[in-house]
Length: 190
Image 1 (cartoon, rainbow, N blue to C red):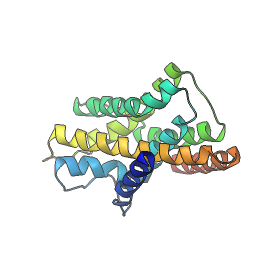
Image 2: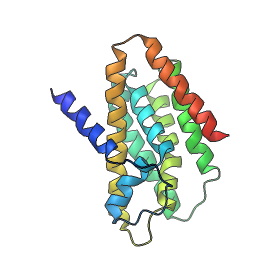
Image 3: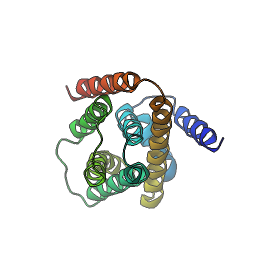
């Protein structure tokens, strides 16, 4: 019952973002802008959900740590942007995270915790950097970061919820979903 409540609460939060618009231009307060940014960017949404989905089949340490690795990578990327540093190829990097997460799912790849956690954190640096560069001028840094931190956790948990459900089915279902994500990522890279 507890899992079901968490799953549907997370799904409801994701469904609240009903339009897919450009990443920038959120004119809400800092927290709401941060919350909406990952949900309104289909590339962010797909990558974060896919990583949560993939984490279900990993070691218990990596399963529990993945949402934290995601948020840490997001905050690191945003910190780089806030510090005025540049990160070349951010949009390509974001699209590649969708593609690579799809490949990990399609191949049912299991990684050692250190490698998987590092990969997840590295993926999220690109997403965090994009968030940091697109923070509305009037937004509070702390509330904006809190917003996209909460959104990242919600999306990861929604992906994990779907992963738990599909882990009980034939592996080919998950592999097909991974292949679709990988193809979507490849399309976004092109």
